[in-house]
Image 1 (tube, helix red, strand yellow):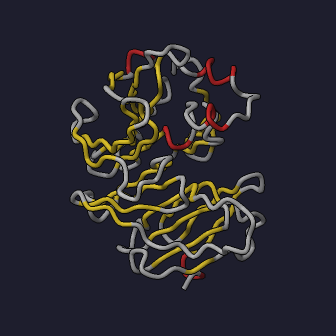
Image 2 (image 1 turned 180 degrees about the horizontal axis):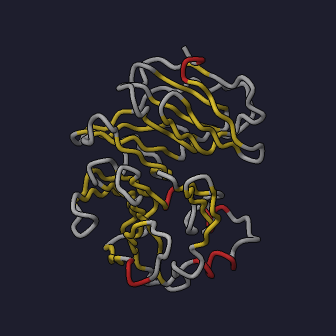
Image 3 (image 1 turned 60 degrees about the horizontal axis):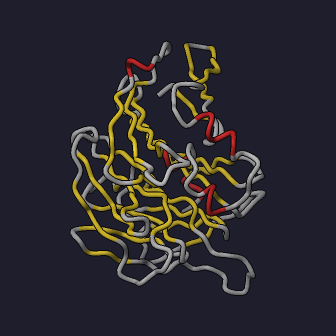
Length: 277
């Protein structure tokens, strides 16, 4: 796409122009940029999990030229009457506020994903504690409820990262606070078993999930126990942590013959897909 985001908590991005890489800033474009700095030094997870911006609040449609960005955030963060917002705009060199389409949401958005057909899905919060997956096929102008909560009586609800199956946009994959991932399709919700090592005294959280961009039924999960992948839609799993300096995986981006990995505190890595076989 020629556009590369740096730290997902930052409004800085890199754009490639021929043989040069230009560092650019979106500071001041989004209403939440100053509010984020207020909480920058806090480590209260209850606050930070809903604080924007972060990686789950940004979705990029790289099939469009220029790349189209979808940003979700909460307006009136300090108010009891918080409102959800969706910003839609193209990543042009001279971006200004007049080019941003700002859409009011009837729910508080938690995470967002978009596919190559322009289908948008958002994990939203309604009535403070009801987690609902919303779906839009018209750039966020109208929404329908795709699924409500999960059927496993998980008290914390769905966790956040949400992805659309690139080979079947009727299926969505989403993470949960109880350590599971879920597939949601045609009102049916299933949860494949993840091969966590129960002997490790750490909290098992799947921070990142991804469908492979080229091969159907291949999925990836990044967790606090490392990188897992399945070639049969979650029926069986394999673990791959070779050469990773950290097994705390926060970002997974499959592209072409490579998988780009972002870890917590130990940098990035690139895995060749052929090495997984």
